[in-house]
Amino acid sequence: MRAFLRRRHALGIEFLLGTAKQMRPIWRAFHVVSAAETGNADVHSSDARVYDRSGVWVSTLHLPVDLTPANLAHDLRTALAQPVSAQAAVTIAALKQRFDLLSRQHSNKCSLRPESLDSIAMHGRLQGSCCSPMNFQHYVRQMHGLRAYARVTEIRRLTSYAESITLTPSQQIAYDGAVKLSHEHGPCCCHCWRWTAFEGQANYLIARRGYNSLRIATIWNLEDGCGG
Image (cartoon, rainbow, N blue to C red; front, side, top):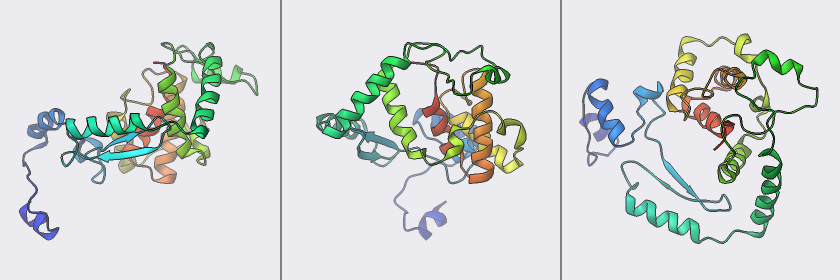
């Protein structure tokens, strides 16, 4: 370890050595995402990113360098103090209008199986949350986050990839890492149509676009339609 740090001119960094079993309690205590957990040597130690109410990036805090309670509180106060831009206000108003409509819809259900999608009208849509009422702030964060993937058409595709794409062992490691990192510990909280849809979506993005565990988990979290 010292030789590794010496080559990178980073001897001042403190470190611990041990087996994965010995280290896991420490990772959990300090909220460290390890490469052993993600299955990818390039995906570890998640950063905390702070955005203001307009969705503008304010800061990134890193474990264990500058992510402290004091720094986080400071950056959150800075973000909350930023005025909402006129353009952002219009966007938020538009999202509120859409939210008011979607939050009253109930065509999205946990009991809906993948094969049931064939019965939906050609231009029909699944709308609303399936488990608990929608939350506006959560909805806004999802919409802002998904904009980064607007040009990735496969983000909008559904169930066909779950059966048509078989992952290699190394690709399966990336998928399994996403399962560990995602909020629901999988494409969805239960094996409904969403699980099949976003399992297939992940298969495509891993196999054809080289997405890693963290990117897949991020997309799954943004696509969460269970409510809340």
